[in-house]
Amino acid sequence: MLVNGFPSNSISAEDRGLMYGDGVFRTLLIKQGIPQCWQRHYQKLKHDCTVLGLNCPESESILDDFVGHSDCVAKIIITRGSGIRGYACSSSAQEETRITSFSPMTNYPVSHSTQGVTVHLCTLRLGHQPILAGVKHLNRLENVLAANECQHAGMVEGILQDEQGWVISGTRSNLFSIRNGMLYTPDLGQCGIAGVQRDRVLDWAKRYSFPHTIQPISLEELLLSDEVFLVNSVLGLWPVCKLSSYHRTSHPISWAIQQWLSDETH
Image 1 (cartoon, rainbow, N blue to C red):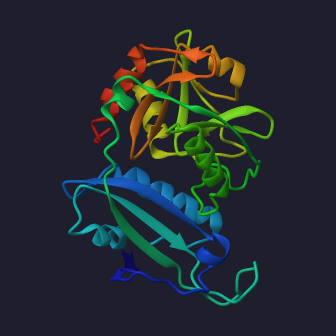
Image 2 (cartoon, rainbow, N blue to C red; image 1 turned 90 degrees about the vertical axis):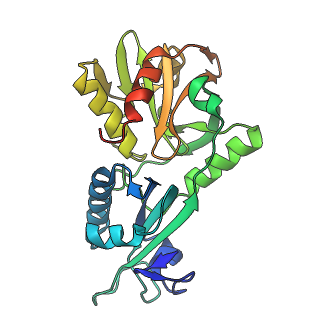
């Protein structure tokens, strides 16, 4: 692990990322020494830093952290740095903390991609906070609790709804539905994370003129889908084969998108 570019396994106990979750992060794959979809991830990182009023490190600084690492999962965390006690930020200038860590790639069963996954319908509901909607900030307790639900249910992923019952995402993934020749993905204007792979799927739809829309999706509508799939930058694309009354064994459009996403140059 690197802290501000230097090998270290520790940060200050007064770091606001630790004390208040005051920061943002990105997770991506490095394959053969090349960070996948780097420009997309960096633009997301810059956007999220701007929302929180953080200075985003230069791209070159983060790329320097990646040197010497190949075929792994990289995680970049930017916090507001150390500060005095209290929620309000100090009026004096603070130096952000950059943490870059590396983990082995997870070998998910091939069947997750080829046959699909059975997913859990989480009881936890996401709260609304429009200012932070779409931002990958460090306050992820809702996702932690939802992931624990899935684990206790013996399932690898779960579907999250918001406080009004609209379907938002997976616990660690963005969600898409295909119904009657239309590609749907939930509106994330109130909560949820807008991931890089979500953007890439929407780019696929634009490139191939596949009808698509971003709008609220009810659970009832989701269960009537012809296909449902989940995406994120580490797991790729997983079709959903079972969710409550929804059962599918064939996912032709999902598989086509999956193949397109496998080319990281898109």
